[in-house]
Image (cartoon, rainbow, N blue to C red; front, side, top):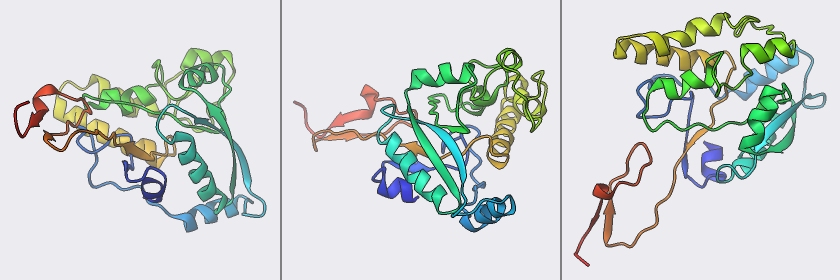
Length: 233
């Protein structure tokens, strides 16, 4: 919420998962805890402190969304307070895919996603599908070529790790209600297991004359029938 208020100037809402409010798989009762004390404890148990920080490279978007690099600078300051020293490396959206497929992303990387349908396939599904083109990590073939070892078991060397069992129902379940529930579980799994650190959903401002009235669309679309005037011109 500090980022939302001080960096985004309230043009955003904090998120706990990759599913935002009004999405079909938005887990309304789930909140990922903001707990600096626990973060310090975990880092300290592994030998990292503010004076001896964990040093990581972070590929950060610059110019993809409003204030995106400034957001990551603020995040880096928060990390520094618990014992993480982040080296921010500016990155364009095109560079993300090149770095991903070359196995050259840092420990963390920023990403953005849009989902005008609100369907979990288009947020948690494509983001974490182990063989998907839009996945955060390289697909199985590239991982094998680069000899990347999946120590977590989430992805698995053959793409059949734990994550596949979580994500596949988002695509394969026939009943939509059951599929949306599978999406909720997948969203929470991704956040709980550190596969993603959701930050915010950005709000886009519309500037118009005071005589116009506009009903916002959850998808972000500007639809003609949603715009009315108080008097004909």
